[in-house]
Length: 341
Image (tube, rainbow, N blue to C red; front, side):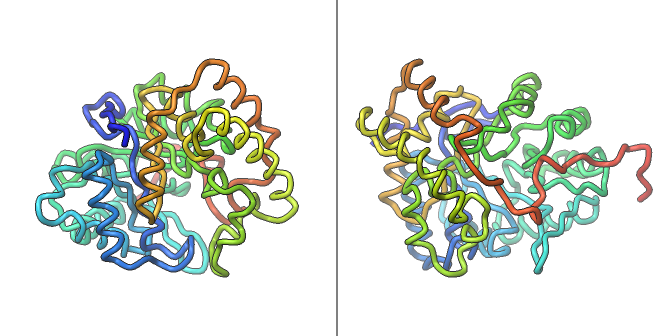
């Protein structure tokens, strides 16, 4: 198995494994039935022992049960071996709600600390931006939590370039979490350059296109009836027929390179720079090991150019999410001067 290198994430001092582990699908029902807890604890331990120590969760996953799972997995000396990231600010109760008011930020942090059974969270993200609250107000409370040593580093997820700039002016942002993969490249225009200008690390979620870059259109045969992907635009039949061409072309190149399509997709992200850390999720040890194997895949400039031409903006049909889900596209917050608590 490849040795998992360590990288600096952002410019504030956080060091993590070059590939992380997204833990959502272990206990959240978005991708089907939650998996047996002992199996998932075993998987987390296997990841840590293999060098994948950057673990990603959220109070949204479950909801809340994923943090409890990680809390159990990190007993017995495991906590000291990992970089633990969690998130607040997204609620789903029949419809999405996003909150970033100071009292909510603090209450969420306290609750996450309790569920995770830790004294401090290494990286605490706002999962989605509350467009009713100036980002400076949300960041002000996060800054206090850093000063109180309840969190070490601050991150944002699905935030626009201008929102990132405003947040970073209040307290340094260590990482931005965003969807970045061979079938989601829109962030390359403004957000990636902004992060690099400000010295902010980039954490790529869904780096395997929610499984599409692993299986292509065949993934639909494996999905349970209530799997959220069945509602997502890119997985609708008319879009899927178009998008499977992208998978086929990636598959042709991966065969030439002697690796899987998953490994090729992850290797493409790893070759974007040491400031990029993908966090593929899985519930199976064999998939985890395959993902780690991506670190050994070497891509030439010609390979990168070919992949980028295959995965152009026109290569994918369908939005990333339905209109009900907030993203960086609608993350602008009011001016600070307009805020009345």
